[in-house]
Length: 228
Image (cartoon, rainbow, N blue to C red; front, side, top):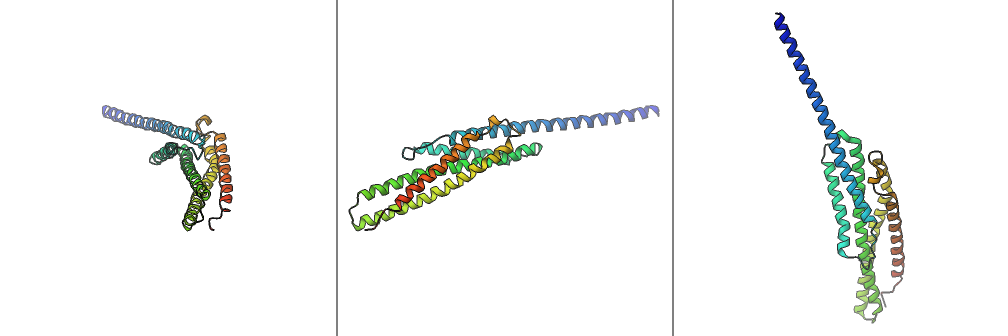
């Protein structure tokens, strides 16, 4: 009987030990997974920051912009979109605070990069349509065909300006809100891994200046007489 009791006690101890081992294993896996997620998110955010810096630091002269350079801006936006979707597909509950901050950071960055690319493209297009209109006005021969072409050219300028104005206004708004997303990330990552605040502010100032210049150009365009 005493032997049977000993065996029972041994079995209970073995069961308890197994349970403790499982608990430690589960805890260890949880810590490992959290560590992996932190590394993955850090990589996504760091790459996004580098892309933001590269894109927003590039200033294109509309008349000299090459399509390949414009395409590169969209590639930055596409890459960050992939980062965002990757994070969205993860079960990031073990690092919820970090994941939520990164989600906001990646989403805001993606939208900024997309609007940056669009505003650059529309600015190039607007510059081209203004040049076409100006060239046409200098070739004035006062014919009905010239008037019709002038009207079409002016309408194209107006359309391109509307597209540009929408894109640059959205860009300016997003750049203005980016510091909020950056501040959410700051407690989780080294500031050196985040997009530089000066680069963001300079890009916003540049966008507003370019918008003001385009508006001034449009005021002059609207004074042109396309009818004779």
